[in-house]
Amino acid sequence: MKNKQLIIGLLVGVVSVYAVSSFIVKEKLDGLRVRLDEKISIQHNVVKELALSISVRTDDRVSSIIAECPANESSQYDRLLSSLDKGLTKAEMQGLNILFERCGSVPASRRATMTLLFDREVSFYSELVQQRALLGDIEATDYNIAKWITLAEREKEVSSLFFDLLNSQRQIISTLATGGSLKDVEPYQVEAGKIQIELSTIADSASEIRSALIQS
Image (cartoon, rainbow, N blue to C red; front, side, top):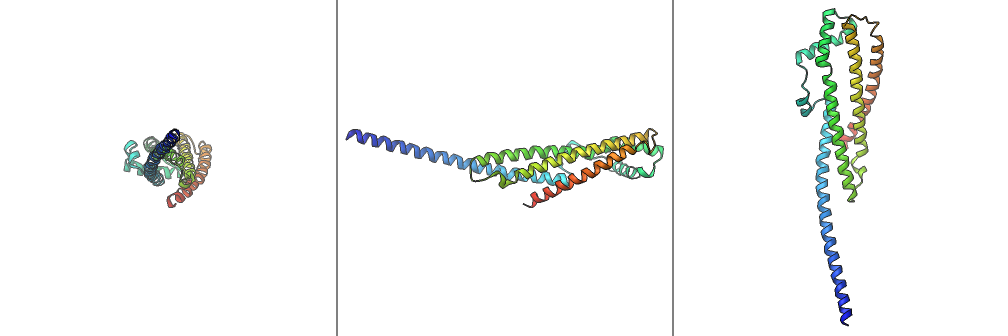
């Protein structure tokens, strides 16, 4: 009889310990879910804002790292560049060559930096969602992670093509500035045209994905 009571007491004790342990584990998991949900919400806003910043080509963090070209030089650079196919004087070509080195790479460099930030933040967002999915109640697909990653990849492609286009422009300007003829720069112009077409296609794709994500 005593042995039976002892066994029952042990069983009750084990069940009690299990119940208490389960309750503590559940409390901790619930708390972890709440904290991760808060982090995911904050990170979602971060990637969303960066996606919008890339589309309008401005971000305060990037502006503090890569300064914009002075307004007067930027205006003169745009004017000379747009008149390049109409013919420029030797002095204007030399001026354009100098302005290109000062201003030409600024937009591409600023976009590349924003794209780098965006890719990093999307990766962190994905990690948070994957961690949260392991705790149950949600699926990674609920947060459009695959689409955000695709957008980051598209933006990296766009950024790379901007630098390719920049290199073609550099070849055209430096060739003309050193006395080359329009015939000499035809291969670079053809290459630039191909890059622009590909750039437009991928940029449109990125824009569509971004719009869908922002509206979701």
